[in-house]
Image (cartoon, rainbow, N blue to C red):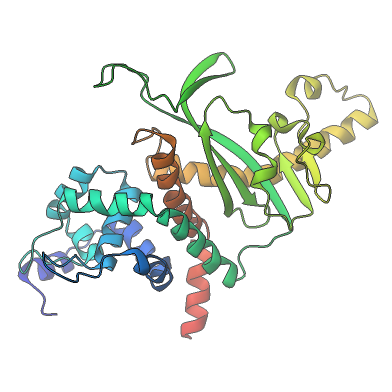
Length: 327
């Protein structure tokens, strides 16, 4: 395709922005062919009367940019006109065509939600990483994070989201939902995700976060008793953190207590990997508050975000593998 004056002017600039760097990394590490093949059977073919649908890859790219930059439907439409980096990633030349509008993206999101296609996106990315040998199935770390929801009742219904609930963490109350994840203990990649209301106890979801092939499972003190629950899988050895008060009571002058404290330190170092996906979701992708109403829509969004977070975690390994393949 012939380059426009805008493209030439943009190519001559010296500084690479954070947004460009992020989009460049996503371009290189995303398994586009796998994602498109997973979504293609459900995407309209454009047969019959009416305007033909916009290409699937373009809508998928627009959706991924929206999720990684934390933009609304109207926000990503405006960003397409404001940012050359985003237009280049999505594949739009304003000199020849108009950008898809917010309503078009809204319909695409509804298509993904109604057919549970974000789960297919998550699964396709996970399968791609497993094929590259980046997911080992010997151990799992489980954890959960609270994602806040609007607590105001100043809305059309005059009430808070009925599917969200409040819970107390420490001395502070939180209203929203929980994202429960199971993470590969070796690579730190998320292999299982469950969305619940915030008041659901972590330990009740522990067994559902296991894929079934692991030998060891790790969790913080909130998962005490996971091995004794009726749904527990007997083949898994649970390594649960000691309760903070009990650990503080250890006597450093006693050799046995010193060994126990060292074991807890080792457990904590292993569990630290589970915080990396949460960091990417909340800080890099801006998912500190839920965007939609209801658990189903927000869990569908989290499927996409954690799939993309897996790519960011495995970025260095994926780029190295691609470089080896190219050489």
